[in-house]
Amino acid sequence: MSPPAPEKAFAGLALVLLAGGQSARFGGPKLIAPLHGKPLALHAAEMLAGLPFAARYAVIGAQVPDLVALGYEPVQLDPPGAPQARSLALGVAAAQAGGARAVLVALADMPFVPPEHIRALVSGFDGDRIATVADGVSMPPAIFGAAHFAALTALDGDRGGAVRLKRAPTVALDPQLALDIDRPEDLARAAQRL
Image (cartoon, rainbow, N blue to C red; front, side, top):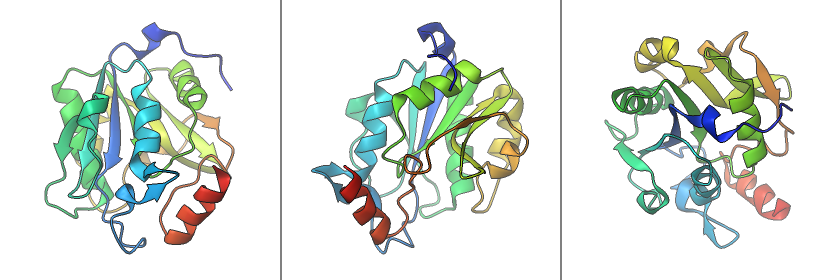
């Protein structure tokens, strides 16, 4: 991992937390599902709120815990139930309108990503893009520079920014920490880890 990012490396870097998914594979609103005494989404949201981002945006759907108290500006997913690319586009557009020079995109259903990993991404960011890699797969959390904003806000479908991460530099994350809660059995595995 890269050395910890100094606070000034966060200047102009906005956080976009994607918390508006449909939870189709979960069978219900997963982001409010309890994980060790608090809603799933709060695990990632609280960790990220402790880092000195220039601004924090949360793209939210209908059933998400309150993130405003943690310093997030809510961006309502419109239309409701839209695919991940729409969430990403709305979040990036909000950050761009707020004057961000880059965005760190994170998922609200990844409860185990540690702050040290985020700082390593920020330290390794060269102004273009950088991604997390686990089990050979590039994924969020990822940082995109302003040169990618137009392409990200024009995305559609359910693939999000994955296409923009091809050949991006990466920072490795233990696959156990990269657990993405998609199904009830994922939540059960997460509960066993904590």
